[in-house]
Image 1: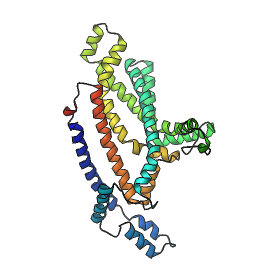
Image 2: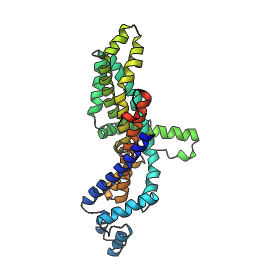
Image 3: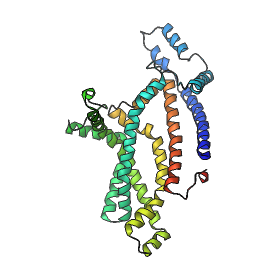
Image 4: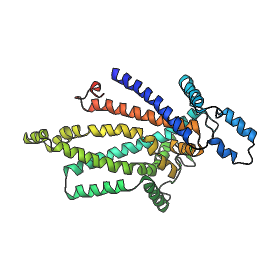
Length: 325
């Protein structure tokens, strides 16, 4: 418990430093949200001045940051979105379930496929099966996410109406039963989830293969085999249990990349999640919405690493939280 409290306090300090750095970088970018409005001849100068005061853009950068930081600490209020004229917190809470649903399903599918294939590839080292699986992993890593998403969109058009190509729900979603609504969302998740999973799956498969091969060469594995233990027990009990530790550490970083990894899939498949919202915020220089998204990414990184550390102690009793500092 002391370790967890200590890590959370370190995380708060990290968030503070990350917020200062993020705000400074945003301020260094040329122009601001009001520059786009100034180019619109239908918007008067008086209106622009009113918006400037309303959003606090008439103050210095230090004052802007202090006012934003104070309202985050006292009211957990991340400010008002310039574009949507709504609370940033409400916008994020509205979109985050869709992003987490898509990203978590991608992680589950990635690990469910990559781990078994990585194990098979390691066990059958240098056989045709191993070479075939390695070629698949190379191809998966060789395709950028946006190319994969584009190819899946083209495939969906040829297979229409087998797969939906946009949105999270069908037109008649509200009329469906509870089970029907779940199936409808799952149906719309198929292509964006595949687009998110392919590159991650390829890298994880190769890492699993490499880690397991390293462990299988250890002396204690040879000793276990010499004692006559079944090969399945040697692989899945002795070898895999030790090879999986680096993979669990990777899981913590994957949790942190949920937000950034969903950008492309959400954009191509018109998924109503945080990715599209934040991309639009960056393009429009929606200051407080961008800040909230950066803070969310940093928070997920901290939580992901803490979760990975705790999971390591569950998988491997030899590891103690006190020794992870």
